[in-house]
Amino acid sequence: MKIKIFRRLIQITALIILLLPIWFTDLIWYGTYISAELAGVDLTDPLTALEITLASKTLWTPLIISAVPLTIVAIIFGRIFCSYICPLNFLLELLPVKRKKILTTRTLPLLSLAIVLVLSLILSVPINNTASPVFAFMRVMIFGVGLEIILVVLVIGAAFIWGQKIWCRTLCPLGALYGLLGLKKFLAVNVDKSICIRCGKCEKVCSMGTSPLKNDFADKFLCTNCGDCIDSCPKKALSFKRGE
Image (cartoon, rainbow, N blue to C red):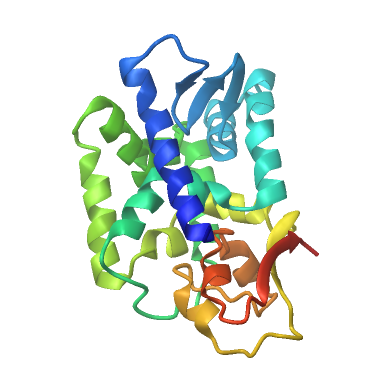
């Protein structure tokens, strides 16, 4: 089975799990991918935990503990939330538009992350939770169409103008944090240089503009471990292996 087919199944399953609490209440899962409870265990995405801590200016131990599981997942597997779970990423991948140009500055999400954290501290409001199109899209799916849809429409419009994953590649602070956590990820795309013919197909297929042939900060930071490059390799020179 191709990795992309497996990934699509995971993405669809993640959407179903997200929507299940709308119709069923007696579940081991309840919440969103911002914050949830799984079998009695509280889960919070690490950026939300950081934002709330800075906005409240209070270190609340249960909140920090609830962010640990997803932080560990990111350290081991990198930005798999982006490629396997994020509903907005799934929507963007379905759009009939591809990457339109190579970005020369690829660390802009780090600036976005810094701005979000600083504003959360200054304004005492969790900025990303309030204005993130990722969370806006989840709220639209769960609670129905509201003003949040404007953020989603803006991201979709930007995708058609500047490229499919322009939000993910240049602005998403949550992706930026997961990217930092996963720089030394345990599972990463490995290149067997003895059989690689450097045809460039892996680079062309990557919607995030990364290259498994490179080992610089931006490529490791932006890589979501989606596996599209592995599927595209005609010589099977790419595979998931333990990271360096």
